[in-house]
Length: 95
Image 1 (cartoon, rainbow, N blue to C red):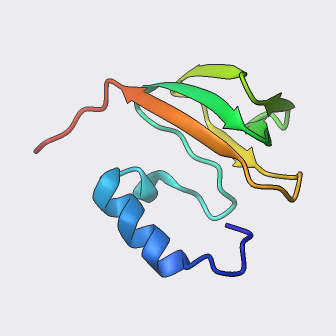
Image 2 (tube, one colour; image 1 turned 30 degrees about the vertical axis):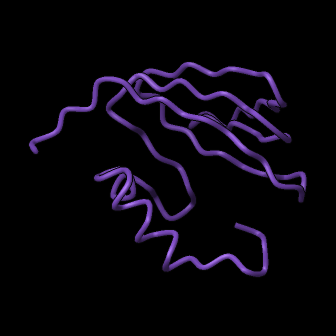
């Protein structure tokens, strides 16, 4: 998102199409809670996981996070790109 060519409108449209309902859970500061069990794997780079109590954990390539309805945010403080893979299990969908 820090890349000068990043298009926030296109990103929003893509996220809403690929992950219906997730964007609606985002708070202005990036904090969010999903109604799922989330598996997150850092594939490349470093990222900070911030929890709602203010605790921050730095993660790097190969680290895995499992969350269950935890309010959190992802912070890239390195200035370098980070790539993560996520699997969200258990979302209740109406469609």
